[in-house]
Length: 240
Ligand SMILES: C[S@@+](CC[C@H](N)C(=O)[O-])C[C@H]1O[C@@H](n2cnc3c(N)ncnc32)[C@H](O)[C@@H]1O
Image (cartoon, rainbow, N blue to C red; front, side, top):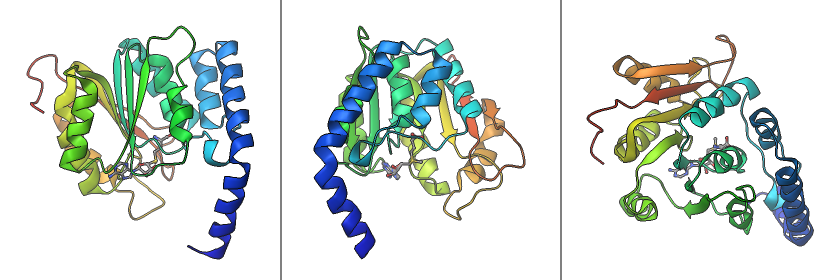
């Protein structure tokens, strides 16, 4: 680990108890404010928490708001997210799912999962499960199925591995868990992307003609971002 990163980690660890208190306090404020969806999305992009408890999301506000509105419209009971990162989008989904949010990531961030589990607002019947592991691994897919306990997913957000093969694997592995008429969304479908490893746009171009799709792209010339959404057919859900 480079020296700067080592110092950053030590510093974060030392300040973790204070950051944790501040983050839970900040979340209480957010809940007390009963934010509109618009406001929730704005705060999820940068909640104002720090260190291991930093909640944020790299999203274009208009794009993620359009997606959140589309998800809200289907009154989701169960949401599955691949790619928790700093929890920004999980914070939104935890306010929209009435029963369960399962959010998955490769990386564990010391105590952060406790904060994510506290995301649903007071009075919500949504329970959050944070699963750590590789979404492509067969035993991990089984863990997701176990967490679902036989229930179907209303909304699947695929925002994990951004390689063409990786996003394709997530789609194939989890699409069968989505109910007929449910939604599957992909982040970073914009034609121009800042990193060679962002290849979701290639995957999206291959599959969009075969599905009922919507695209939320703020500016067709932008570099990065862009959200593609599939509505699954009302009949013939693919087998998991
Ligand atoms: C772009 S971030 C997710 C951002 C988040 N959805 C948001 O907007 O708030 C992608 C995350 O996916 C995770 N990831 C990448 N490959 C993965 C894999 N194979 N399984 C699980 N998580 C993965 C990374 O660790 C990273 O935290």
